[in-house]
Length: 138
Length: 105
Image 1 (cartoon, rainbow over the protein chains, first blue to last red):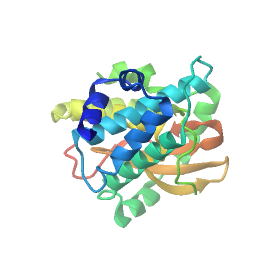
Image 2: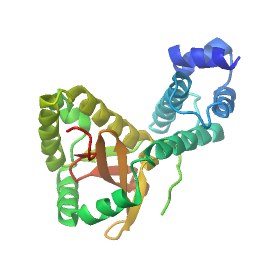
Image 3: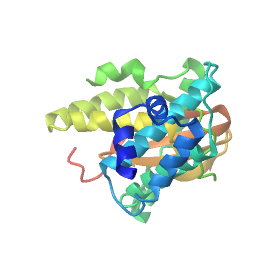
């Protein structure tokens, strides 16, 4: 059952998965959350990537609802837990890099003047989003 | 400092001109070393994480001028310093994104 759900998550949006499984928003969030228990302690895998992709897609769904788009979608407690799980995984991935030496370097080399100048620019201009200049990075 | 997630409303993520210009230089340097797609993919991954999971990194300090927190995050081969303003649902990147040491860049 777990592998079937992982496979479905890999090829479907959350809405498609809910429709195929005839599950409510909260019920599917809960099932996906249960799956994370089988992934804890493991590294990167297709199943983990599918779970992260589901959680990210669900976060966009919730944002759409909050921004006024119509729809019965909701931010469930299970989705919050899934997002916590994703963040814990990302932080764990970074531990090999975020050594005390690295963090000391980050503190030491942080240029406050550059930081503040950039903030003033953003306050004045609104700043740039990646979509504004991603084409320059192609 | 808060290290936990809040309601999943996307954050707005904005960059300064300096960050944009330095990224262009970084991409050019990566291209010389055959790492352009790797760096570009890391930039896109950073952007998505900052939008949806801004607390993916490590908190460094509280900011004094405005209620916010300074964070640092790693998406290999890149390092990003950023600030989170939770009440405004805003992330700012005003310090150039740099490469990890020994990243080959």
